[in-house]
Length: 103
Image (cartoon, rainbow, N blue to C red; front, side):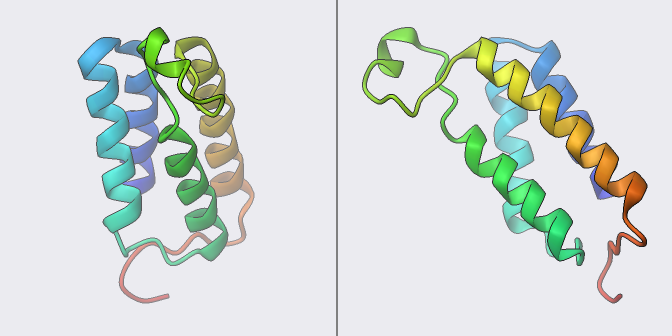
């Protein structure tokens, strides 16, 4: 299921560092923004919000100084942990999460 793949990518982002971390984040974002199989609007909103927030991750401390919106590894890890739990809670408690071409 695509949700499992997305959660795994977020978990990988916690475990990896450097280029592997960035690649895992980018893959998560690409799937969220391009996959049309998640028909649950609330879940799609949650995933889109996470993907958007991940855009502001900047591992380079000097580059982070360019904007107060950028954040580093510590905040990224907190954000990912919180959002993994949010995804799992939602999919567990949602009456039905539709993934596929039709509901």
